[in-house]
Image 1: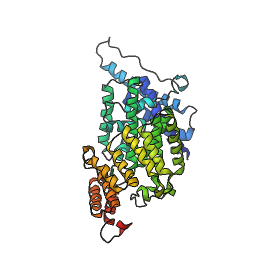
Image 2: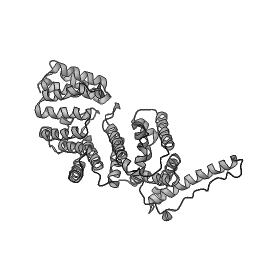
Image 3: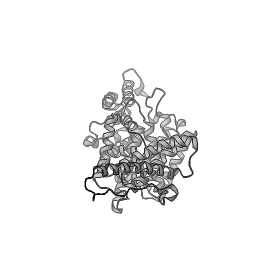
Image 4: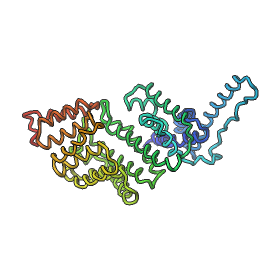
Length: 421
């Protein structure tokens, strides 16, 4: 790791803590974020030449505080010039303490900032954007490119999110005990969505957006550090690690998708797998079981199999049965059908899919068509499988997935011979 990379990683980790300190002190989200960005730029310029200070977080808080104080002074001066009534004097100006004098410089406000960004008044899309901007430290342009929208559109979304939080009169404190669990679930869901978009992009020419999945893992690590006894936080981190460990084998050199059963498992990151397995093993033994833990346990079963044929599908079915009880949703049913087909045969899996035909939440989703086509192919119904793959290819907006599904359909053409494999 180079010195510049070490500094970049340090700044990314400290950014939300510094922003949290400024919001707690001054109560100004947008101005605080601008001041933090200026402090980060100053550090990126000065630290490589002068060295990392003994108290880097305190250094950043001090510099950002001075920037914000200067802004407040400017506002105060403008107000004084505009005031016509002498009695309406401007309030005292805040001052920026030196790091050594800041009694709260070592306080980590990342959790509060995450909870603030996932405020229930915001839509999921706004929660994701604000989390990536304020906590993740990604630029508006980076977030816009990741979600394939114009930068101006993403800037408006982030600005509206900040205005919504300001209008709600939210204080920068932990929510009441009764609301905390629900707010934390929202944070976990946002991190889960960010990771999924990075691991399998919903649209565009690339299968993966590594910067998003890496950022989700980094934030999940931070959350696990702050809440080490929370089983679902640990479960989500383990799920991300165990899933991301397969990333090196998911695509060929041309960027085309390689399904799990066909991946070269020697290319998986086995150090990350060991970390994920250890994390989920410890958490299942010590915490109440939740949906992220169960999904992580399923991922661990896949990752611990030396080959696809050695996968313990019976154990995966049992885990999906539990998941379907505590967190039922169409995607669980869809994945459960695949596991059932591997244990009881494709006819049983297809029967499990029938309930999804009556569930409008997956109507028209390419995953339903793709899974059904796969099970039909397993059952030997080549014509129906081919039609299913083509339907799924038409419905997906991901070009790598589209090309993969079209190739599956093409392999079932008469005379190809692949249906006998």
